[in-house]
Image 1 (tube, rainbow, N blue to C red):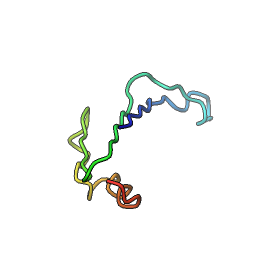
Image 2 (image 1 turned 90 degrees about the vertical axis):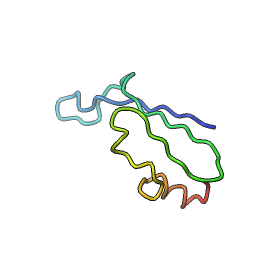
Image 3 (image 1 turned 120 degrees about the vertical axis):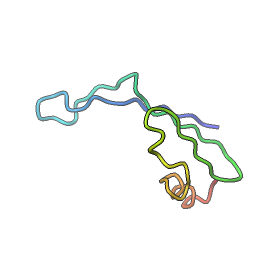
Image 4 (image 1 turned 90 degrees about the horizontal axis):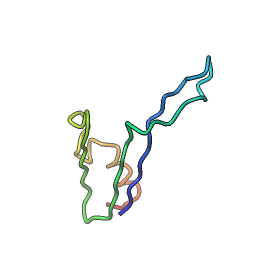
Length: 70
């Protein structure tokens, strides 16, 4: 099992420069992946009801199919 956390950013802090930003402690995306016999997706948190958990309707399903690795 592997867990990865990606902090959110506050971008465009500099005048006209999109390259300046600050990493924020919260909010953040946390993704946990583990090898399984079949592909399942579980989404939690704010707005989770808008993200499909069906692998056929989520980009995760396309990645799993391309890698042939549930």
